[in-house]
View 1 (cartoon, rainbow, N blue to C red):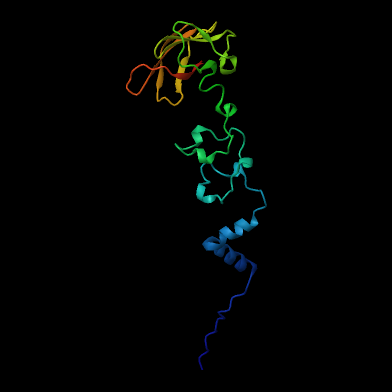
View 2: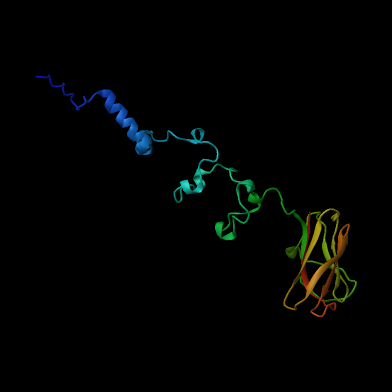
Length: 208
């Protein structure tokens, strides 16, 4: 009789190499992320381990970034999109001169409130110090030169670099504007709804 061929067993031995290779295959196919995450020690991944631009908004949890986690002056205009910060995003009193930098809009070197709209013409009137300020230390005066025309003086002040701002004050629907200024005086003109000159109270400030 012919000799029967030897039957080879299909059962493989379970070796260390088999197990390791199988686990590596499972990790490569789909389980790598979970295993790698589990293997990371707490706080082992920081800024040095993350490439610039790799962390996006979608990667951050809600409230993940708070004020305490942002270094002082780390966020400036270059990091903000246009109109990204509105009034509703600011806490009351959170923005003052200290946050706006060194006098970004200038400093008021002098101001006064003209609380008397009429009065005798060409007669200088000293404004109550409670309603006036002159950084030069001199008096603040208002002289009515014609209907709706006033000359405001800040004694000793050199108004040669900044600007003068005027706003009508009261309920008489008047508008006031600066006609000119030089040295220590400014000319203010006030008008009614028909553009005719009218006497009016106003506030004025010299900002430099």
